[in-house]
Length: 275
Length: 296
Image (tube, rainbow over all chains, first blue to last red; front, top):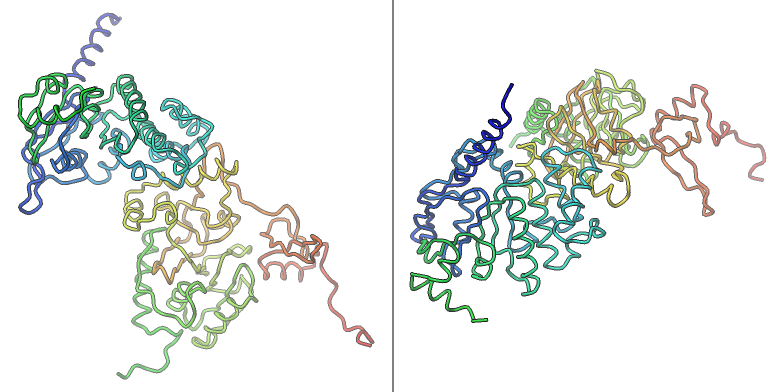
């Protein structure tokens, strides 16, 4: 007879072990285009459930870094490793294309700044959300549709609009739909590239609110690229400040934003208009 | 240059070799679209330039050729192509399905069950089943390579969401040999089950798109569907008005401007064969006889 307490204890240990190991590790990542170094020597570790914001102005290498982390761009030097669902940590460059694409549509999400890039604008919202499910072999229309309506509800889109194409949606709705489409396979890591760019302030606030609750509820790890320090402050636990392809400052969000050490970070923080 | 002025079946031998190599590769990888150097043919694109090239490459002097267009042996396209090969290859032609060894077809599969000594050549306008779902050809090729076919179901999902059932009636996507998703050319989905485990070799030629693909004999061909919305072949719920057939694919023919219509077999050879065997439908006319004084 197995003692239930021991089993519980073991499971708790296992859980802690899971959360103790980093999900994604970047080691000395660099990318150069000829003489131009877009990104230089970036290293960090991301843990499950952690939200990391990468901030900096245009041209600081944020998007290059995000593309390298998500395996879309091969780094000139350095490596990215990811702990797969089976617990094995693998270097992204050693993954075959099929494995990488599978990872991309199951365990990862990618929220584009422009929803038109992340959505199929001509097919219905339901099919947009259901596509990932069908890609992993779901073959029951009723169940796909139920899951899609459930997710539309969770991102606060009226379920009555499930059969409308996203091109009939407003900017805020498109962005929420894109989030639903990414989260439907319950990924563990989501990349976001300026998810609130181009939205007006009240819609931004609602989207951020939604994101924050989803991230907490689903225990998501998120890497979010933004130039908006308010987004970083609201969503992220940690901040990395980039300038000229280098990480110049990193730390807890409150610490970096309330007490910036680097002159550039001080400049960034002080350039926000006081409320 | 001292190329001969005439070569059997129009194309020169080097071109035929090139096409045969593509065909062999297509047979080796069922459902895979093999690129080939499609030639200009003395007919416009969309009239079967791909099918004609495949037929020209496989035709031998002993072959008996049948050409059908929408099931019919006597439409312009069918007659022109039949005459073309009668003239350039001097092969015997026929309209009877069971005596033909090569059957070139546009949009139908004959009702008569095909046998092992036959080759069915399809004319294909658009070989890529993912074309209108994913516009990038580089991407669709990658999707085929990695067998990522979730997108195909997105199309079927859209059909059900919009119409309540899978409304795709022709060019209904199939999975060949449990690997490649393939466009069966614009045949009605009624014909899809005939492709499965078929005794004849099936070759598909797309001239403008420069692709050849194939289904070898006795290969599994499955129409895609959902568990709760299974594939169903569609057929008008009527017998053929000429031969009374209950299980053939029917054409709807409008007979007047007051809503009159008749349903007849789209496969003319099958219909004529049944009528010759004594089957009659509701509208089959008595054999035509010259009436005395009818013009007076």
